[in-house]
Image (cartoon, rainbow, N blue to C red):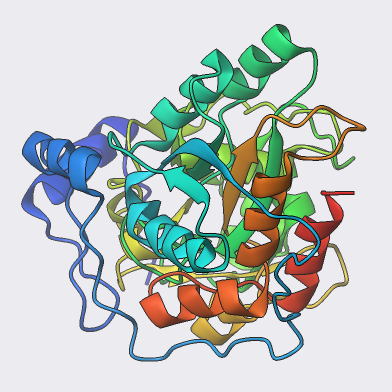
Length: 374
């Protein structure tokens, strides 16, 4: 039997719109795919923080090699500091603050609404607050705007893992194909060769499935690429992890089917036998096939499973960041430095585990963040 013909771009767009509108795509087993938040929900979250999701049945284990927190005995810390956070981090940040203030009752850390990481980053540039918790990497415009004013980039340190597949709570990202597609894995080099125009990883452009090792009727078929239109946290993460190398920022190639949001991508790939797309795990239905990822050619290909995300072995796990103004070569303000050390300690990461939403850092990840204080 001959394989079905690829859908036309016009027909495919129609299928995507109808599928997204009706919510017809199937979710991961036992789950419904999320729907875009309504304006009233967004307004409420901005004032109160986002409603916490139902925890995953399987929870991570705390890394027992994380260092315990040792409070300062040589210095009495005090002061009043104002912070901000993304709506998904408001509850967690308040728990960190409450625990930290038990050690240092003369320290006041305020976290007033509105809760939105984008607003917090702008206030950091204006100097109206001292720290901001953001559930993604800062926007390039945030970084450039900060550098234009101060002459150096903002200080950003990872303080928590994201989540496995919680909608809106920094879920891990996966690439996926149509169920008929025999592809099992990709490397970050191949993603760069597929999606970028800059090819900073050194590979030639990949445009057909045969260039990814598929044979037979797949060999000459073009790869129909799907992604989220810039700027978006999902596309920025993929751009940084796969398309950029060092200080060389990757750029997207022409011909990608860009969507305004991440919601339509899984239905689009399910509707096109020759499609490849990416999305957060919370947005992916069970009518597509996830592919494993290797960080480099010849390296181990890791599936986007819950154990791999919890252990930070999967290449597209995400991170939560603490951001502030720290002049290069100068120490961070003592209270903020101590607050960050507490968050990165076993006690601070235990608070993440107790909330049962985000994933605590592994000891090596926490050590990398602590080293930024030097």
